[in-house]
Image 1 (cartoon, rainbow, N blue to C red):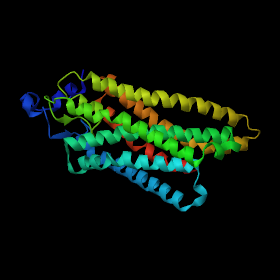
Image 2 (cartoon, rainbow, N blue to C red):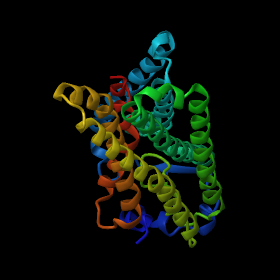
Image 3 (cartoon, one colour):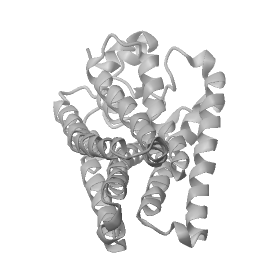
Image 4 (cartoon, rainbow, N blue to C red):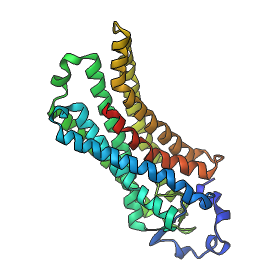
Length: 310
């Protein structure tokens, strides 16, 4: 059952049976925040605001420290700076509006602004995945082939990898707003979410939107389906190299260089994969739980990036 039909009880009868032309080309959408938990929005905003503030301060600190400290001008820290910028954009593209909804009930968002937010969310989510793979490659070379680390990952190679990640993400996310713009919205302009997620908007359309849904799955499996196997294989090799070290102290020290990165990977991929699939197939999952998880995967991973400095 489409997600928009599941919230029919939240809409006035007159709205759900309004004239088709009212929403065929909506100038604005209405973001509900977290449906069913409206009374708790102010309380929910406290951890959201705290985590967002920590993420902003932590990632800005990374950029400042790496810029000011010449000894950190190496592949790992270049990738960390890319990840910090990505996290700043990803969290800032959603959190200010989410907090406005929670604090001031500012639920209206312009149609074009909604599409722009959607593009940034999906573009920088894919970008984060690509940078995590690049960081993983850096850890793999540093641990498994340390003598050739700086000859393999030169500044030129790092720049090309960064450019490839940006191009892949930008191109994959580009069809999202164009597909959404082509659909007529004749049911309602109320989005049961706190931000303009692709599938949440598409589910409001009154035509067959399988093209959008299938493309979303294609991107999901193109990004995670390519990146996750690479990360898993490289971490198997990393763990084999760590456990082959002669002393316990050496094993612990080496594992510490990639432990925070592993936590960052898990914090990003698990909520994203769960959120994307349950939005499409988890029709029995409570809506407020879906929205909370969707916010978690955009908000929590940026907090793990500063810990990777260790």
